[in-house]
Length: 374
View 1 (cartoon, rainbow, N blue to C red):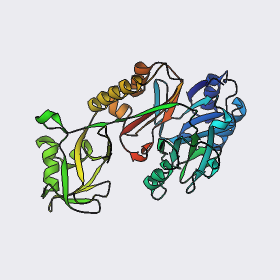
View 2 (view 1 turned 120 degrees about the vertical axis):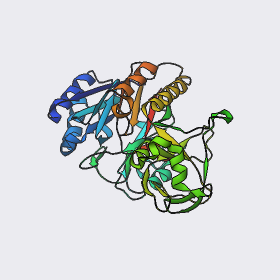
View 3 (view 1 turned 90 degrees about the vertical axis):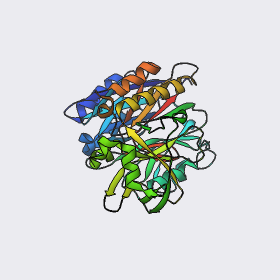
């Protein structure tokens, strides 16, 4: 069977209008389509079950996975903070995927002889130890690779895995016969030395407790942070904390990968810095500047990297972009999605703006995770 895809998206005051626009664009549904991806904004969270049922009935596609989001995306376009639905269907062989859900034993539906290779995962940000669940699940697929995001919503954080549910992780596991390529792009750039080849400036945690850092390189942590931020930002610590983030290098990465965490508190009297992750003595970290220029530069780098691995045009794609990205970071609506279309071509793509992005075995922030079906 030749893998074929079709996608659609739509906006409207009612879910019926948006879903009808999706179905119109999905027609004709590729023959033997067996799996659909659906992402809907939280305006329609109360009609989630109706949306899934409508798509299943109108398309004949039996299996669906997806999530609610504050925004959704499709090829060349984003809907952020407005009522919308994006959907994509594919003619996967039934033997090539399994739907899963549950807070624990996430692959019980894919047990047995199934070749669990790669997974698309949606998670509930309210579930305890989501990073631990992600790491555990990555060990249950042969490649160790997951992609996806945590549901985002101003009301209920729902997921779709053949039914509408809450809590834990859910999604779809693919066998090795489904070929994919995936990359991650950061929304910030490490602060680099002006000499010595422009390498990121690394700092060593010398005193800390939990997520509170007392000293970096044996100096008060807040002083080191203010130096990194620069004189202008240092005069306004709230602004500095929004613009300068903490990058934690990923152990064993040969590509300089890092996870970004926010500065969530400062103690000016005692020189303390609190970040959104636990730290330990001797841990390395760097400071990163957040901004549109850095995001565009890294997006173009990522697109060139993934394009170099392609032997032809992608058949379809999924894209998960942090809530802090989109037009807020790229300066205008849909600019981020147009970069993908301009860099890789016009192909079916859907996704959403999650409250945390999943790539490989980790939970990220301020990133975009692109996955292509080949």
